[in-house]
Length: 531
Image (cartoon, rainbow, N blue to C red):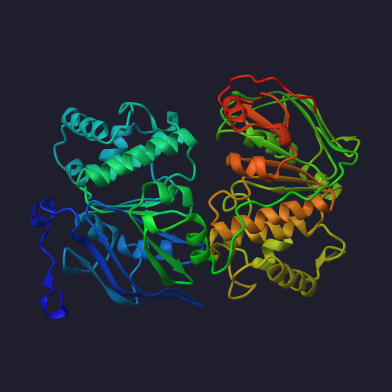
């Protein structure tokens, strides 16, 4: 439609009516020339995009490619510097998320926006226009239940959100936007925190939404098998620009990865052949409680030698977090012993463990792994403030810390306009590189890597995996905790599936079968090999 033909957007009472008669294949959302700049960064560079009714359109790109910025503009969270947005050919402007919601756009964020203490139905109705009037909760429950059944969501509407699995929480988020009448659904990394089974069920529901005439379902992800399995079209962003538009049937994992990164990407990395050395870590009968006072780790025992990667495989919430925190000194054990480098450190403080040579990469890179309001220099200092190389008589040599930060930014490929920017301005992949850099710069004897590639794009994932294997070559003992079974099987020398706080067996990686590991992750015992 030419610019002269653009009509004004309808008033509020017309919206549902003019969205209701969308035809399959119709262009329901279009952006033209969207551009957005931040200090030192051109996040979106004249992006054009069309989304059609009844399709799943994947938006791909590395961390920092501009995906989140674009979707934030479409949801009214950000205002573009230039460019136009059209819904069904009508030019619109979103001054806030409420404007976008009123125009039939719903966004499900990667990080949950739910109130844990409230029930499912209360979360769905929270902020709904009907909630400001006389609300018939029974009727609302019936309507939401019908919506859930239509798209294959099996969920107890009276359950408290804190009682739900991650997959169920994701379903609540989706039902919440659908109940508000969304015709355009934006899903930001929808399968990141889900188990394989939960992810498969969610994808089935997403396909059902698109095929039922719900409207356009933009799909933002960097999990390429997921993209190939469910999407109809793919748009690839790199450094803020559209670099490829493809029909999914014409795409392959390798092609999409090359378009995203701009080079060939290795999907499988060969492990270096390192002869295991002496025992670095010995865990004996370790047990501990979770934050709710319930036993989360139950009689766990294993050893890790120099040059070995010991992989913990398991679905989230089976004791992996508590194990990492006990070993790092962040959580007290209720029983058992931790022996590091021949010394009992069961009750040793965190700083002493760092000074002895234990490095920890936490799963929560934002909440625990960094301080967002600190500069990159100050974040690097967090792992060196006790080191005589940079601190003398309590005085920090900031010239030395700045030099170290500069070297780490270059070595680990951290994309940043400068070392004095705040850590919260970095993309997830670049923040993870910074954390990895400052921990590995100390050449730890034991490296605890908890979910080191979760939520990272393909290029960053490849980089982190290579760095872990480099640490193995330098004869570090590595505890790898991952919810990506392919990653565990690719990198590990020993694989230990965890279920409900117990290690179900310890299997040499070269003898591990995917079906056996999967069964053990589900609590089914398989014959154990001697470590």
